[in-house]
Length: 309
Image 1: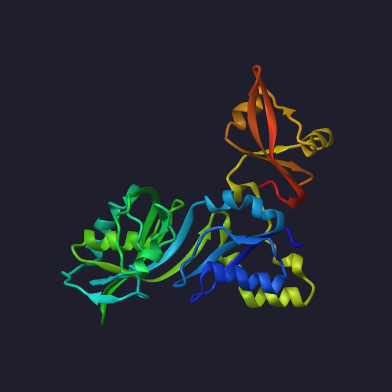
Image 2: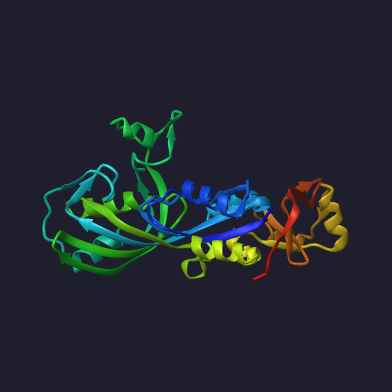
């Protein structure tokens, strides 16, 4: 069994589930899962966890994402993108300068309503299943953060005004909903026409591997080369380097001491416990009778190789 993370460049036309299934066949690996859904329309960075690394998937999926976004004004769609039932709608003239002003209102914390074609469950029912039955229900708005939105290019083409953006956002942001909201702010509607995820946490597109590259390495017995080198940055957690004695204590589920200085530095819910540049456990701080202790939360039978940077 392989233990680690692959930085997959998911192609268009397949679901994230399809991507996992294909890698399962290539690698003959049962324990495998992705860290954040990409629609079939989208391509780009999709971190895939293998073996014991599936236990850190929750930390990787919570990372910020960066997308390259292509959108078209003057159209609506039931899926909010070009793959659905697209209809042309009335649209006033939009200029690049108008778009710049509109985009300023979408930076920072915003509220957005998830699209009906999404995997969210409401009262035990998946929205996309209801949507395929022709049903629409009220969805509560969710707060997300748009850290940065850049206007890269825009032009008036044969099908209307189109724009290219780069969006850095928090977990849970629906780019299709963002595109629709930008269109409404411009006095019309808009749909997503193309999408590339350029970054997911510490994973970037320029370091990703496509299926052909992965298969070639596996066939040439270079499987280790498909694994992405992990660092604390990718999990957004502080680190604590263990002594040999502390490593043994953690291995058997026992608590270890931390100093008051460490308590200030490590004052987050979880922390990475490293020994000889390998992740042996994820721990959490506990206060016991006024003493600061580190409690093992997840021990790894197969420690994951990490670099402290």
